[in-house]
Image (tube, rainbow, N blue to C red; front, side):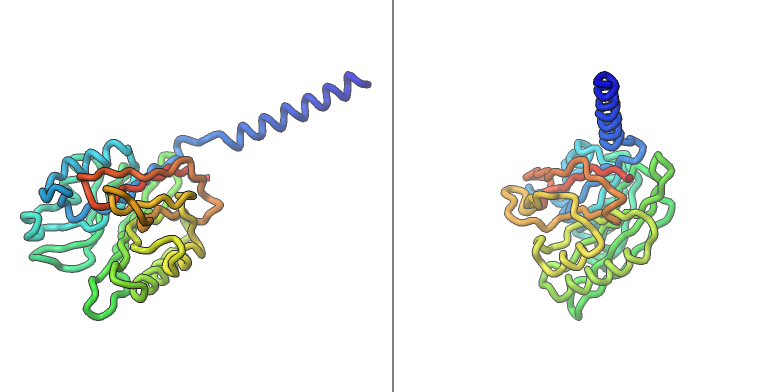
Length: 262
């Protein structure tokens, strides 16, 4: 009898351990490496337009999806360059540009780089007060190696005050709430974690960074304003999240998060 009980206890412990291992196992086909990076319209902290410096930060992070903010297309200040396409070539990723507003003979807005082809793309105009810079949220749908379709959105909220940021957050929350696919949102949201702007987004999305490490400025980060958010919370598991500070490439640190779709 004692041997039977001992065997039974052993089997229960073995089953429990096996279950724990299964729960902790990672499906590589559902892993997504996401980078958010404000690239300062391609101008480095040396004052030049060395896109290789920016591309190096991206390549070293080995992302699957990149949300870039402050991206220029054919503007005078960049010498009429297509920053998204050039960075796509330098990183061997698929580029996409989304206009927020006309600027300096060209356009200014969001950029996405992707290891996946785009199933669909859409650019959402966000609310902006009179005389304020227009803002946008660039959305793509991609299919992972597992065959799962996800939504990835890159955006850049207003930097001048809470009024427009709160409206932009509410608009984007409503846009994402209408989707029935897993969502990843990345960008420079110009709001600290306790701000009302983030409270609105945290209603349906969770931040990938538990420690809320600061991301700005790159030469000595003091505030967190760059984020990667995911939803629904039960569909994702965060495997890693870290801030990447290059004091030359941009005035913002890049934010990398590695997530698994459950």
